[in-house]
Image 1 (cartoon, rainbow, N blue to C red):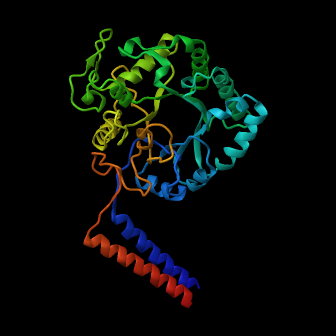
Image 2: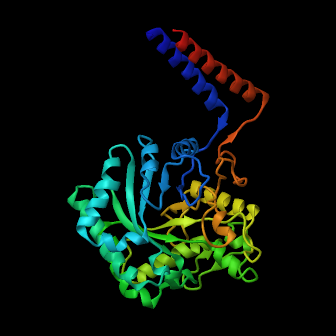
Image 3: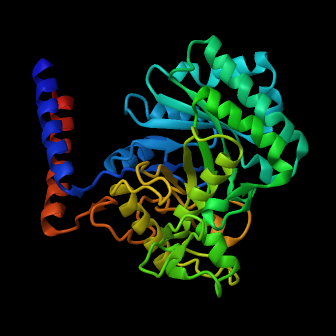
Length: 382
């Protein structure tokens, strides 16, 4: 039996050598949002292989799905996990917060790299004042629980906001938060400064273009060559809307007395399909937006106001999600179809894995299958 095992091991090594040679990949310096509001997605184990073949090492979830966390065990992929808005009231209770962390986080930490918990998502978009009031206490309670369990150096706490928490977004230097959110965001910012966690924003230049396609230049939102815009207060030139939005958030934070909080983009993307009134939702535009964005990330670009701070971005989303409610665009933000094929050409050679279909790779596939059949047959006969 030892000889059988040795033969199988040798054959598997050959299999891996041939299978790796038939796939072209290039690492991505970007995070990805892994949503699961669909009934046709591949298993987490297959998703784990897909992301590792892309060399994507940062993933953001909207929950703490144990199946996903187990599938990515020992992969060194970093996870942001989420507590939905429905959990906020419970998370203000220290006992319930501790139970959640001990059941949904702590058991996986030894093998899966969980680095952050988002408490709520776009809470201020809900106009639910109970949620507004519970957000900061929930964040504080979750953080204090991590401290008590000795996990606060390993896992940080934040929340993700929509861009409409701003009342002013242009010029970027005049960025300001909505007045009705002032008292809430003041406490949130103090929390970030205290625990040194990032301020997360979901920013979609697509929305600005969709709402005013005759006023917003398409090239400006797609990172394509354009005249750009000038901030009259700083004389800084912006050649794309996303960077202007990021700097507007920095200005709003500074206006509330903080210069020590990092802004990160927790969601951005472009839909490949939309309803008739969703102007610009095409595969071509989605490919340009995400492809050009990936180039900026690869070049470690910063914004005009923060040129030495490389943008930190999680693209939305990994897959098209066929059960998301709302307009057609909501179900078509994915880079991939559920079968793992790209929705569109990202525009950058090697960023997405593509199987090389040729006579050589076909022969390799036949040879690999033959090796497996021989190995299994040999073991059975032994």
